[in-house]
Image (tube, rainbow, N blue to C red; front, side, top):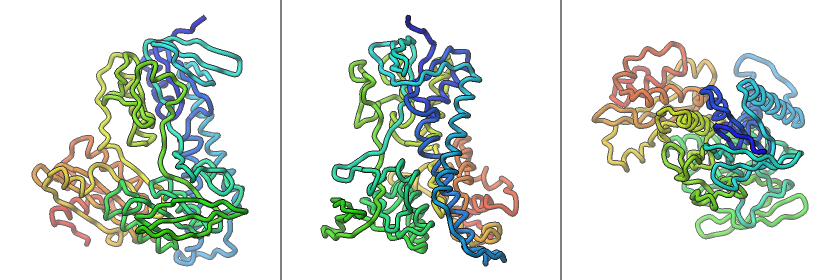
Length: 463
């Protein structure tokens, strides 16, 4: 006997479970299917547990600076098992929270593997057998997994993915991180701070390649000050695995050198989880492991939507959640605005942190804008100095003709919390005049946001 629903969501990550809850709030009878963990990769193996571990490394770093703050700290060390246990405990707590929220909103949860055998039909293979579900509206939110390159595949021993790096059985002594996007840099920052001799290899001409070039350069200098080795325009061609060691063949400028490491973390992007769903037979177009959609996440097959990582860049949890809300409101008969990728902030939780929204300076120029650029350094901010965090910068990019905020880019302490101010500004179509007339509280790091805007028009006060 088939069970009928107004909406079926496949995948209970930050896109799927939020879509399910919003649909239920709107009066829809909703089912959600998850094959592994409620909360998906983000909550269980990504965003949250990594932040828990990075918080540990941040505190560890501060403990070593105790003398600067008039404090005494001796015999500083760490218990790696306890670090991991705390991280996993936080993930478990939030996993349980998602289950509670779904139950509270009367969402029917099916733990199992889903396939779509035909239009409006979903089959779920559970521990107890097969469940047949039907609905006119199906949301695919199956997420993505780590990309593995030929010859560089993870084995969980010497070569790790992000999952292995979150539950290490040892502390790497000499670590190679392949890829310098947010995931690679965050793990490099964590392990480097805890004492690993860390090398980062990036195939592009700079680390954090999606960020503004000036911000990437600033971050690189800070990482190198901390002892991290960074190789840009470089490629790992081969990994020779031996007993307790890996020999990496690294190509730079056409020349290959060999270097030994005891651990390698591969962070070279992601691939969408499209296999086994029956998408091609259904008529859903898949391009390079991602489902092709319109701005409202419609796949072109009536009643089938795709949200989150499986629907393409930017691969961010908050983008997935917002798409989930949008699609649920669309299904319920609403007229929601489409998600605008340029107004979604990206954050990297390394030391220092990096955050951005909108166009970089180069992108704005490439699009033909006449621009004004403002910059303000952390060293000019009283709160940053008081915190002992004088290294950083906030950069803003404006349309010189209209005053529209085209982009904002930050590097330094707590910038992942600051960036939302500019996100709201872009959403409200704020101009430079609006931001200049806004009163920022003192003393706060946010004052630098104001000063950066002022600087774009030659009016900065404190630098």
